[in-house]
Length: 336
Image 1 (spheres, one colour):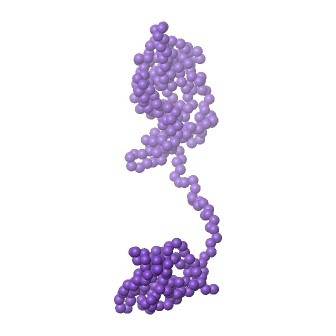
Image 2: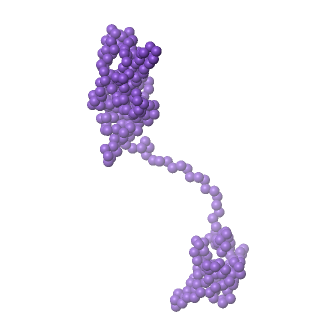
């Protein structure tokens, strides 16, 4: 039962005499039409009770809640609309020390939210929270709390110890019984909750925008110092794919070129040659109108060279053994 109210659901988890569990909407939160649709189970007078009534928690004369806020969404099946209401008005009551807030509700519209806000503050500040009525006779088979029923009281002030007039409709919240087998008696007690009324609330100022204009970005992490390479520094990945070598400054010499088809390379040509290698593509360079591609063959024991003449369109392949993967087509020598 506490779970529903902790999650802003105005309902009670109840059990009837047959042990069946139900979730019933709180009578106090129904509108006038919903309350009028409730069934009046019985009209009780002074002769129907076997003893004085027990006003549970006494009479709450000072108000305890000064302000009530209701918020949620009204959804018509296509467009959600934010709704907020507050009671007794835009300002809190001068009496009461606390504020009642119920959020994340599914509401019909703004008028319904205003009604709920008024109901909340009326129930919270009700003068009598619960009335215990000891019944005269066996009423156990005549009454049940599911479905919810109204009990109408007509007890005059002269019939109560405190001179309190008890009349009107009360919600039947609980039934307890004491069965004495030896004595052959069944004593039944009712717990009644008075019907509370209060003026509806007013629409609240639902925020249309964020409470701040900008979203501050978190500070950037400190960047560790890093030395940028000089423009004349060559970053080379070797053909074993096990690291990147930095040579500065450098010169290149072509080796394993028995046919002398590769000319001497200068720095610019070697840079072009190794550019594609750094991104995992075939190694390439252009010199004297000839495009040369380097890539390792599928077997892995040699490199294939694809030579393409731009002018004539002629192309051919040559294969150079690499002596078991240790030879390279170029040697880079650091020079000071």
